[in-house]
Image (tube, rainbow, N blue to C red; front, side, top):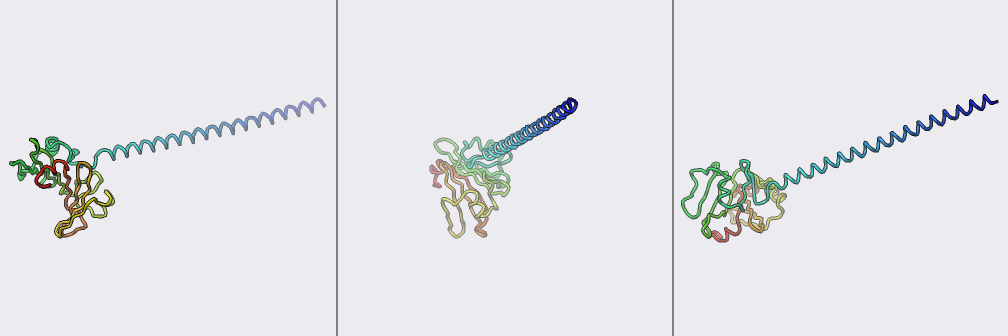
Length: 205
């Protein structure tokens, strides 16, 4: 009888021991799974944050008053001397003899107009005439009216004299004008940036 009791006790101990190991194993697996899930969520969160930061950097590289040309950010709001320095050598066809100067670059791809105002050479107009130079919102020469509206919204002003059709977007200190071809009023053939203050001081206003 004593032998049977001892055998039963040993068997019970083994069963409890095995059950304990199984429970510990399940708990360990559960802890490991939680750690893996947590790690994956942290990695995904880090990747998402990194992506957002990267997008923010891209979106703030160029403001609406500017465009990129030959690796330089060209802004209508910069001093004329800064813009001239960034644009580099102008074409010999440029007109630089009077108070009103017209600098031409890359065979007319870009034009920069200045005027002597309050004793300084002041920026008045910046023109883009080449399709490979885009505004800060990725549109330009060759873009359609729909693409312009998708990028900038409804224009603040429209003009159509039968030969030239333009849409304008007015900002506090500058204006962006998209001119559409007289032959094809659906596609931009020139983008013009205007410095509002200096323009108001010229005979063109």
